[in-house]
Amino acid sequence: MINLQIGWIYEVTIIIYACSVLGYFIDFLQNNRKAKKIAFWLLAIVWVLQTLFLVTRMIEMGRFPILSLAEGLYFYAWVLVTFSLVINKIFRTDFIVFFTNVLGFIIMALHLFAPMNYKSTVLSEQLISELLIIHVTIAILSYGAFSLSSIFSGMYLLQYKMIKKKQWGKRLRRLGDLTNLDRLSYTLNMVGVPMLLISLILGTVWAYISLDTFNLYDAKVIGSFIVLLAYSTYLYLRVAKGMQGRTIAIWNLGAFLFVLINFFLFGSLSRFHFWYG
Picture 1 (cartoon, rainbow, N blue to C red):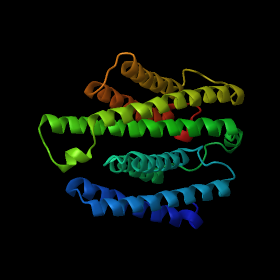
Picture 2 (picture 1 turned 90 degrees about the vertical axis):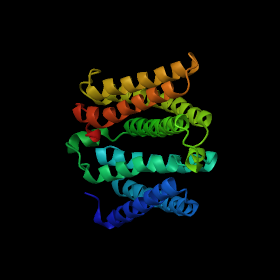
Picture 3 (picture 1 turned 135 degrees about the vertical axis):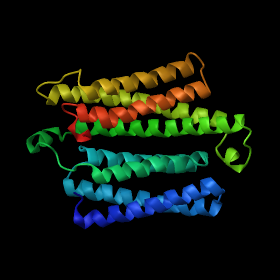
Picture 4 (picture 1 turned 180 degrees about the vertical axis):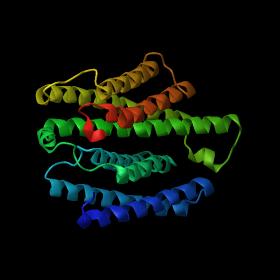
């Protein structure tokens, strides 16, 4: 359960987050610039409150709060909000903040139902190491990059469909240029793949050092390497084969689907990744 002394921060964050997503939805339907501006500033407040909650939990627990399913989900949501604000500031790409934060709000909602306690006090004390925290942090950051990349691919496919059907209008223009959407999706994957590789290397080293028995055939381990293979294949097709457009966007969405499967399903089947399920 969330500590009652800081629980109000989380409750206020959820309410403001919902209002922000609603504002972006209104802008998406009606091209309402005023609603978009209000939604953006509400989202900035959400980021401040999320960060305050994260820091408060860090001080309270004496470590970076990332070793349970609930903590991982919360940090994942914080990463999505942070990335979306930064990308919106740099690239001025319409709708990316809306689509990203629909996903972020879902993650925040899932956080409410995630168990907060560890299954073993003794084991949890053994797991609190700098190497583990770095491993999990980098993994979730890579998942954040993959999440935004998939959203850009989704926007690409949406605009591609609208162009094919000749659905001209403001919404089409605000989705962004197809070439730009494809480039941003590729750039994020180019960042996410090495981060995930580094995370897997650190996680493997930690497991061999800290665990009595480490099985490479663990569901989460296999799933993580499949995710790495899927995105490495994406980069190979994009760079070596020069594949662009609709086909590579569909591949990217398929790879992200496996990210979600690995995060939620395979984490629950893992023998030692219990902080994800």
